[in-house]
Amino acid sequence: MMPSGLRRIGIALACIGSFLTTPVFAEYADVVLNRMAEKEGMRPVIFPHWFHRIRFRCKVCHAELGFKMRAGSNLVTMGDIIDGKFCGACHNGNIAWAPENCDLCHSGKPGLPPGIFGGHDTNGPGRW
Amino acid sequence: MMTRRFSTLAACLLLSATALTSPSFAQNDAGKAVYDKVCVACHSAGIAGAPKFGDAKDWEPRIKTGMNALYESALKGKAPAMPAKGGATDLPDADIKAAVDYMVAAAKGGAKPAAAAAPQAAPAAAAAPAPAPQANPAALNFNRLLKPASKRNPPPPEDGIHDPENDGTHALQPPLTVFQSLPRSNAGNRVDWVKALDTNQIGPRWDRTDPTAAPVVMDLNIVREVKGSMPDVVYPHKQHTAWLDCSNCHPQIFIPQKGANQISMAAILLGQKCGVCHGKVAFPVSECRICHSKKKNVMPVKNAQAN
Image (cartoon, rainbow over the protein chains, first blue to last red):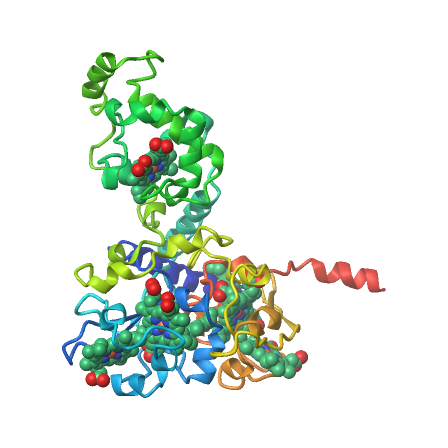
């Protein structure tokens, strides 16, 4: 009847288990953006969903500002940000603090791959 | 065979998850259990000025303020570094109080004289640290794989991804300073975001610039019948359209027609369909009951009433 479904879920949950043994305890839904930052000599960027969803609905970023809902799929440059696109639509010194506060965004440990962190348990083929 | 073992492990994980989130320790051992699990993180070594476990000198001035004051600090937190309930806000008050009793008793060297003066307290301090169970505590953890309460919602410098050497990291807001005042849940951010929004405890903007713009919330439930014994899935448009635009789901993720989409748990766990958001940003897939919310036997009863 349904054991095959349950068994697969079992595997996935086992994966969560093994994930938890690593020393990363990042807040759920924190996203690392690092397609270019580190190559250009900056720390990776960490975007905290929890902090922003208290202030904005998902729709503002994922429909209006054009962030695609897939970690690593958005090519963001500092040029865009200073032009008022992506993070720069708000981090413009008007809605939120301006781009000159480099170290608030570029706050990740060197070497982090782009992707979502925290206790997520669906993460595409790699984890499956 | 392999897979069978995995499912068993999963079952264990689920069971231990429920064990942690609805703890009802036996009364006598409750204090020690909570201390070993939560408070030990700071109180065994005296981190950030926390009074050390079993250290009479550290505890004496605090004990003088009375047990009620200590309960109050433990339950509500104490500036600058003692978090409410030691961060384990899902534990019942009684368990926290039991932990305080246990810690105070240890500081008094096994609950001896009540009106002890300084000279009497000193030897207790020397004697007390020994009995504390220090032997390789990590290996003896009850839930070896479960994220311990003290490791949930960590402040940015301790979360393993923010660089503590970056000055900006220390200017970021620790999640718990906010989450403590929001309704809690058992997984994900451990915040019930739906309730936080419904009760106006948070007011996230619907428009980037206009704080008065409001979403058009659509109240349409779609019931997806599930084969087998799992309860049916109720997909609510209401909670989703409060956060999202129709275009976030239609038509890329779901064709807007009841039953037109093939959805399975396998797809969800692969990060497709509901799994685009659930398990990443919205509450995770481990919370089966929130989606599988409609009991099977409800249907016949309804039909019977209609007939």
